[in-house]
Length: 129
Image 1 (cartoon, one colour):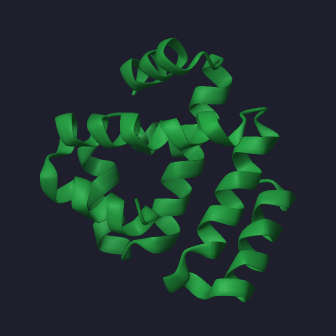
Image 2 (cartoon, helix red, strand yellow):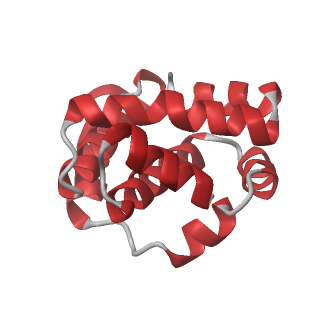
């Protein structure tokens, strides 16, 4: 996972803490939107994902509330909840939304390299990207 964090800091110009926080936000969104066995397999197959989630601080109240409000507006299937929560998480990290949108392709490529196309399909479906 350290190589992903380094790539994000280099390619996006974010700090190490911002890169870690952004990856955690994406992983949490995946966790909320994947079947539990699929997410457990995902975390097992992606080096360092389990440790990153275990050591991450608790999700903030703002991110949780934003996700809940988005769910009320669009429900899980519409994706509004996950994007509202993600936007709040990235904003709290001091990452503008244009930069936040660039996290996805880098993380997807990392998943492809370490977990293969099957996991890419699952995380894309979970994140609606």
